[in-house]
Length: 407
Image (tube, rainbow, N blue to C red; front, side, top):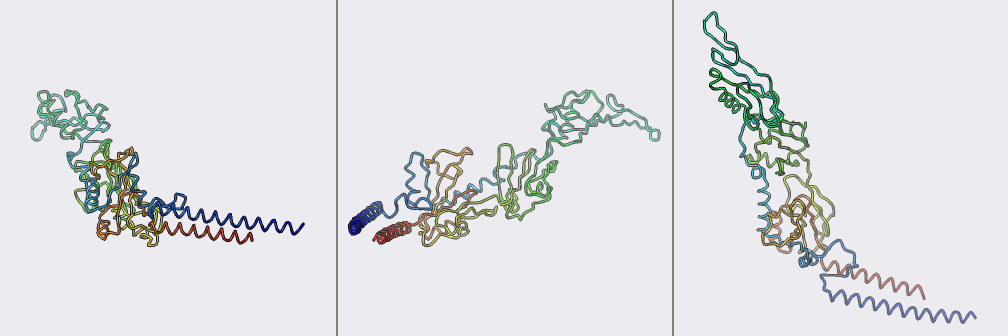
């Protein structure tokens, strides 16, 4: 009975060994054949990977909603830098508004009127006993708040449109209305409380505040100085200026260096000072995969790769350096077909850099990295082949070990 069991076990073991060997040889041969038929640039989908290969990023252009892949050349880098120049304060907020103080609804004015003697409507005429000359005293009207419709009322002059005018313009209008009614009227308008001509300054400043504008014509740096200056190093601070529907941001040190970007402020402007809000994300075959902050004045693609630890010599495809970005359409060729826009009107694009070309190292120094960019370096085909062979080798040894254990 015992000898029969041993014989049965031996027979089953031999059959199992042969079956494992056949399955292992079949799987290995089939997998290798499939791998080499597809080419070294692609590999089975079940292999672990850090992202798409360079080929997979490029061929997606044939999809129904393609993302254009643009080679980074000197011309492309120059066009991207030109967009940055067009977004400067001096371009977006040109100094075309008049310099001077303009009142608006909610402002409180004091109107004073003089008449030459004998005063007929305003003031009281008196006789100077020493000189015998007649004089008149000023008539100060009660303080008035400019109405929602932008009007004030002056006796004998009626309703005066004040909103949007300077105090001098209001004085001239009141005097014109009183001409022929008062005796040589002289008018002075003084702003008692300013409720409309203000600029709001918030963020990384010593004291957030609403700064009143004057007839001098305050500029951007005046507002920051009035708020006590910035609390962080100047080269790490970004200034955002909002005026109506226009929004633009610039590094503060560029504003300091370029007088043309120190623009005149307008009532209702909002100045926000941000500390180092810019970052890009490094992924793939780079020295480190993480979100990396950079200074407000910006960095180039070459600097971004260096801060990410460079590209890994044992893994990276030097021809597959990509920048994924939601780009301003102004920076793209009008003939380029792009996918659906984002809600803020930006188009998804992929920029490709071939570091095998020595000229690319110079171009990378001029190509700007923008906030929220993704810098991705694809794995080289040889690295994927090595990964595949490691899996095959480990599988064969595992099968061999399993066979040995069954003996």
